[in-house]
Every structure is written in structure tokens, then in C-alpha cells.
Amino acid sequence: MSTQREVDEAKIRQQVEKVVEGIRTKDLEGLKRLYAKDIVSFDVEPPLQHVGVEAKSENWARAFTFFQDVRYEVRDLTVTAGGDLAFGHFFGRLSGTLKNGAATSGMWVRGTFCFRKVDGDWLIAHDQVSVPFDIASGKGVTNLEP
Image (cartoon, rainbow, N blue to C red; front, side, top):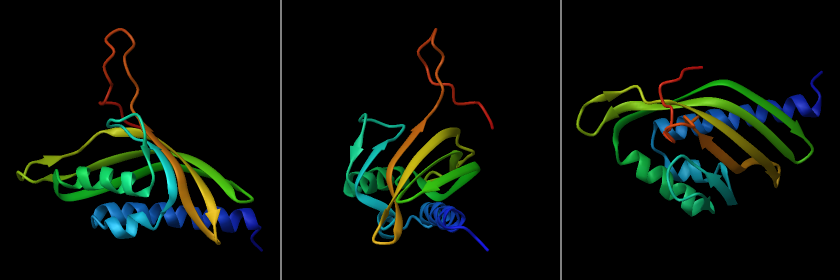
């Protein structure tokens, strides 16, 4: 018999799969339903933070404008849930076919998320995506693989 923690962690993994599917299908409305209304997102592109589900949705909409077809891959997903809060981390890669027809394999990024249970649903309340950077040059290192 599964514990509540195991059930919650499985539900969160399903939510992450819905994020992957929402990105693949460019389903902004579906993606919006996976985020808390007051999400704070620290994404790889400016500004330093995107606050609220509308800002997060606009961020995805901007990313989708570059792609004809888009894929998102998640590796090494970890999830820890307890009560009404959960956190996890993963490696992610956005790739696909650009609008000009060129294929891109994208780059691997590090992702962290915090989920909050709202009315029985696990919603993303915070996410952060980053790339390592070279201290000497101050430039992001985007050629690493998990």
C-alpha cells in the first residue's frame, strides 16, 4: 500500500509530464493550469524574475515564437513531497525545429521547482532555471550534458 507521500510524489511527476506535453504542443492555456496564480519564476531570460501566472505564460509564449516544432526533455527528476509543499530538481533541454527550418538540439539547463497543494492540486509555485557560468569570463557554459 502506498503512503500519502508516495501518492503525492507520483502526482507531482504527472504534473511535470503535463508541463512537458504542454511545451511540446505549445498549449499555453494548459500550461497556465499547472502554475499557481502567484508563481515566482527565475527563468534563464531577463528580467530577474517573472511574477504571476500571466508573466510565466508570456515567457513561454515568447519562447514558442522561435519554434516550428518544440520538444522538452527532463532527466534525473527528483521529487520530495510533504504536507502541502514539495520540491524537486532536474535537468531540462528545450529543442526542436526553428521557424526557419533549422534543427536545434538546444542546451541542458538546471531546473528547480517548488509545488504547493492548492485545493487538492499540486501547482508550481516557484521555478528556477539556470546554466553554470565561467567565473573568469562571466559567460554562461551551455555545452554541458548530464
